[in-house]
Length: 498
Image (cartoon, rainbow, N blue to C red; front, side, top):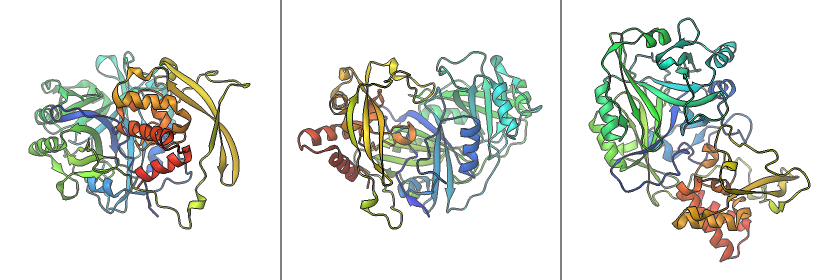
């Protein structure tokens, strides 16, 4: 049975604050390949490629969710979905696999030369070692000969297929990019999009979205494409760089080879959706439709999405889907609530645990050893923070427990200004309270955060209006109304979760 749950398909974008500038993209977010089976896709992206995904906290099969606002934006009202976000190290982009249910679906497997095809390009340290693991697990290889080949600029690449037959390029560059993490097999990523008319597509990305687009090259035989994919014909290219995040999109047009433009619906396995945060959502939508795109959202209008976003989904001229998102003040202040299982009651909800500390020994204390929450990410030791340990004691499933948590806070929040500075001061003043509060910016899904305090371990909260408002509310409730952490938690849940 489908459960009603939070809208969590926009985690990477919710913490951006849009300034009053000309309409266009503020930054890009996740790529969402539409898939046939989430379990099979996780076996590929998580188990074989070792991309990090949020833990399955409930255990067992991940449930299908009912998100009315989301499906209004998608134009799939009545459907359910389930999804998981796999982070790509060295980028701001994740692979957000979405499986639709309770709606008609027709799978498609486009060829590399077909307009609308999107190739996920993963930059890797050792393409031979990674390919060896994939082929041992039975993953299909598209590259003729089944081995990596040398392509432009001294890179070595190979095309493999994910469980939906979607091509994934493993590319080992001649030298690591500057953004590469210190360790890990995958060090970056980008997208390669096959288009029908490169001039028109480049114009849309440049004028409607505000991307920096290089001038398209002339058609020419590309020997690298031939050895990598076996596809003949001529090719022309352009590179589009997104504002804000600087994400690279390789735009490719084929000529002299059979092409069939991709014609799918959003829910069909084989489709691809991109997330972008924009300013001027109506103006950007109008520019895309004027260039030949189409609106998918119900009624052809934007939908309100908790917490406080406008969202609309459009089909770009080459049948790549794009969800445009923009902060909207108080248009949707609350999130859909989770439906309680049959027979559940308030008494079955675990009580808020107690927190004591800080702990000062006698066992080994942080940072001995140092802790890396996300391999390859910036480390807390790289920033001027204090780290303290506390005991958390409570009862779950009628069994008592005690565990230990880390509370990290900036030494000097004065580096920020205005309400952001005040919020960081609140985190310094009441860290134990914030560590017991949920955050409703979806950072648990996008960043693996465990509490509101997680948002203040680095500069995450400085870009997040939700994080700031929650922290300031918590401080006021504790200092002015003398509420306990449990009472503050109940107040925040009541305000944000329905």
